Amino acid sequence: MRPKQILVGTDGTAGSHTAVRWAALEAQRRHRCLRVVHVCDWDGRPDEYDRGAECLDASHQLADAVVARASAQARAVAPAVQLELDTLLGKPAARLLDAAHDAELVVVGSRGRGGFATLLLGSVSERVAAHAPCPVAVVRGRGNADEGPVAVGVDDSPAADTVLGTAFEAAACRATGVAVIRTYPWPPPLWTAGVPVVEFGTPKEDAAERQRVEELLAPWRHKHPEVKVDVLVSHDSPAAVLTGVSRGAQLVVVGSHGHGSVVGALLGSTGIHLLHHADCPVLIARPARP
Image (cartoon, rainbow, N blue to C red; front, side, top):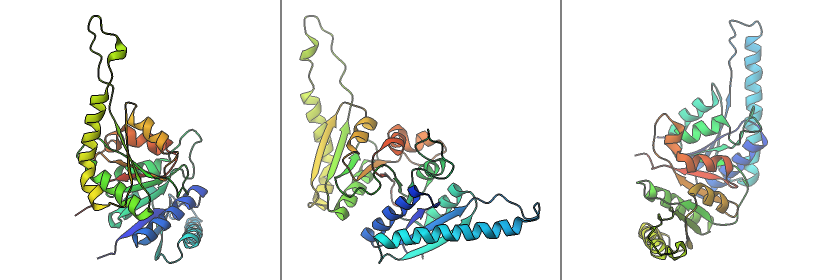
């Protein structure tokens, strides 16, 4: 049985080097092996081109150089971490998803080669984040952030406990706190005659939401008493609040909505928004496989 490992994809860009360094530090925190993978997107067919075999050899050499540079990046920040280096042929997203079946966590950068300036998240990263069978970290924004809390958005979905557990464990190994974000819409006004709108406050509703959050937090506070917890209840959208909080956080944790064929159904609008706009790495939490 293969030991647990963290998998990071690299394409030789500056963004992927940041992702490699982040993944190396995460492997060091978790005492895991780091598998560094570069996928060479080879579409050439040697039987159709006279120089096909030579081009394939050159592609292999380039891939080996990309992985070697990534290895140096990992060694620079976590010299003791065990490394496994791979160069693969095929479509990057598909090969990374195949490799993810052996991983505890997959790490990718937010942009890759061939990205358009108007697109904040590369297609490979988005597909991996949506379809991987394990948690995925997308390293974006301040990819080297090592100060601030771990921010986590909590709702009433069945995944809430998994998301909180992931956030508390991440905070514990970073010796930092957790900022728990709970959002809910304003209650509709009761338009009754003679009652001004300003009298419709929400202190009771806010208190009720805080109580629900505290019930969810109780087992994790008990398991990690060393982790400081701050709770923020807001009436703004979760995407807006978490994006704002990400500017002072070192990691944002959100849940996945399961597995399916539609990206929006897999990640939800909040997760997709954060993958495009967060100012720090984003971790998509998923339940551990049996």
